[in-house]
Length: 51
Image 1 (spheres, rainbow, N blue to C red):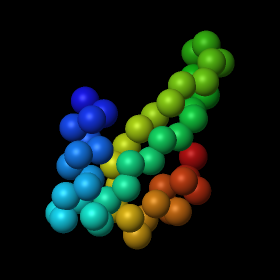
Image 2 (image 1 turned 30 degrees about the horizontal axis):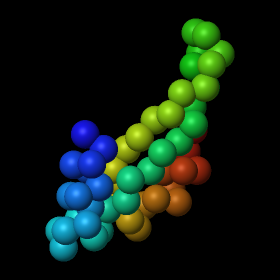
Image 3 (image 1 turned 30 degrees about the vertical axis):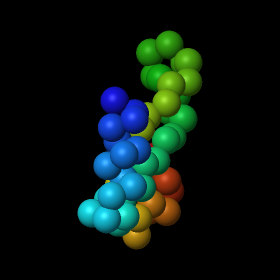
């Protein structure tokens, strides 16, 4: 699936989007896990600031 997302982002319609990977701590186990999302390029900083 990751290859498909990266290929989509390289097309001309995908230039306005960025794939963001954040490390999030699980409330149940306390372990860290990675959360991936595709967000518009202009709102990447806002996405990373929120918790």
